[in-house]
Image 1: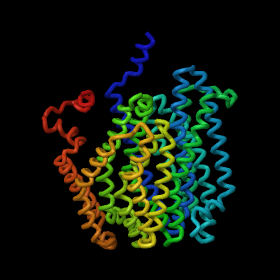
Image 2 (image 1 turned 45 degrees about the vertical axis):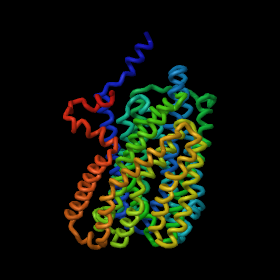
Image 3 (image 1 turned 120 degrees about the vertical axis):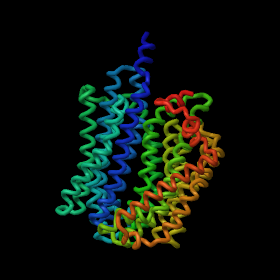
Image 4 (image 1 turned 30 degrees about the vertical axis):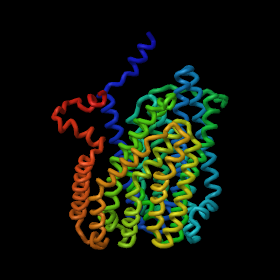
Length: 538
């Protein structure tokens, strides 16, 4: 009886899934676009200059520390909380939540205090090429932005709980709230407070997201404030989970630290140019990866216990193939349209032609490897989800070594472009050479030849996009800057439409099965209102 009731409660209605997925996707799109606009705003208000360099350098560690805690909460806390809810009682689960809330608050508070105290030393190590004045400004901004670690981590805590209780759309809106508040405060205060207005805006945005998620959770779920004992078995398991996660996170930061350290000794505005251009590549990659986080990782976690692992492998490789189908051409298009995209957003501001040119050149070097950046993130998260952290540690280590090697070699020839190209080369080489080797020690073995063949097909279908890149990049940045916005927008739109159309046509000719599975209903002429759900159940 209870089993039938549980099955009825857990029954998934397609229309509800579609509505929820659409709302989540819209919130994620809005948040990514707003985050991109935030970077553009900093570049336009303060220029591609040492002031913007200081802000981006100071914000790097706090935000990535917050992302680390978000990963802990979604990949560590949430599965344990789910297990406690299923195997014990709601009272035990509430007790675990109280302990975890206090632990997150104390730990992030200690980290923020330590960051403020050690800011001068951290900044000297992070950007040794900065002048004394630049390091002083960066240190002051770093001390302010360290508060972001506390508020984003607490926001992620309640966001994870809201996701567990199926408030998906509301949980997905936190990034939009954070960025919108930050942009609003920056626009109001930048003339009075300068770059410090942007820093305090970032803190206010993270605080607003935390309050939003916490208020929504407490309005729907009671949680007594009894004194925590910190003797919960789930909390002990989570602490042990922190150790390999900390190692993975530390190794993942090395490529970004290399960009900052090398870039600090180059031309003024190099760090800003690299940061802004890389943000452009994370817009399509972030949309795909966040969709996977909501839709695929719960399934991977359930399939991790399969004895044979066939379902797990199939889900893993199908997810990669689907992501590559979007990100291979999207990355090539970013490379192809780097100059018109940069001219569209930056020449009217304080970036100047030189700054805009550096953003465009960096984007051209970053864009083509977008698929490998997604693969690196997804593969690492997959290994963590199935509790195979040792291969993940080694893979993050090989990527760090490859990035250092390529950046060291390429910067001697191509300056800041060598940094961007070295970052991309490290990702691609790690994907094609190291991942199949280390995945032998996980359930995700086999299927690599098929995946590489699929990637080659997509790259071949993207050849017209590469030809577009050669033609577009023949025009200097000042020519694009002199053109009207309408002309630049038309060129970008034509590039996406023509390049995307030819890409889909060539994928059909090359018989890419994912394209055939989508367009087969159109060819056979049996489109119905619910054809998508019907095809999923075949």
